[in-house]
Length: 424
Image (tube, rainbow, N blue to C red; front, side, top):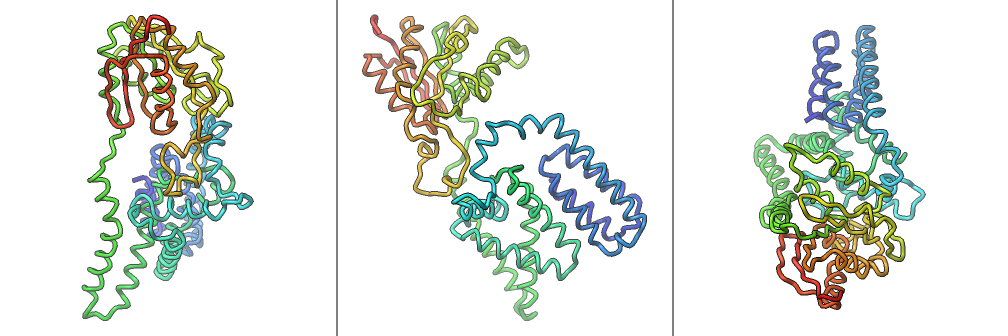
């Protein structure tokens, strides 16, 4: 929405660069876009470049002055947002490590794969996700052809569409912005404009008598290209709140019994067991202190080779009359990289190393045994999908003759009600 708004306001200015109202609306609208969307800075950078290359705007002293005011206003607002909000993430060593495998660094061995990742994220996803069988290079060529057709129509439109993606690619090359489809959602309107311009150009080349048929064929081809995505989503809908009901069940049925929560499940557990009408501030502070990057319960901590319990006293707390014990990270860390382009890899193979830290399952079951009286609830969500830790944990529970009382499962979220023997 922010991209569409910025482009629309810029085109209104380009159509009449002497209109004071249009300039005011563009300046104010750009500020609104920055408040709505982080990558709007790329779109507005493209707007500034497009208006700068516009001959009529450049020749007008009022146009140059108003463009400078608009650009300065946007730069000021973005600088404030960066200092107040974005800087902490941008300077985070953990976030850099997480996204490092996507930056467009030409020195890395998988640079070609990263370019493909960029082409998919910026030029195909999410609107054309069903066409991933088409190489990213084809999308890039189609996009370039679309930009060329826009250039023939007018420089402003071509630069408006192309410049934001060029600026974002530069940011990716400098390690300032990662490559991922959800982070390039802002580019979807721009890429679709480029593709639409190319389709319009091809239809215009057809004889008048078959123009209608050519247009129908082109739109039909596009519909067929995206159809697999829609069919897959309807057949296999994605529920991102999966596990909410399991957590509610454990929360209500534990009745004072201890609950063990896997590290990857801790954020979900905290969110869905908090009474947001009267939140427990101390509990929230405790959760933040143990779950952040580098903290003992961080859900995506790096491997340590051998599991060890450094801060046991921090990972247990009483809440609503029961003990909450938070799991230690498995040491299997997920980092975004071109490995996700490998269709042969299962979700539990994307995190590395492929096995949890040595002794992790034994340590965690020992911690459970220490608080079970004699029963206990075990909750895991993403832990089982990404970490692949469920088999090892279940095997260790069985080895210690722990009896399964009840199992509740919903998607990748599972809860076990177990009973420990008298002598763990």
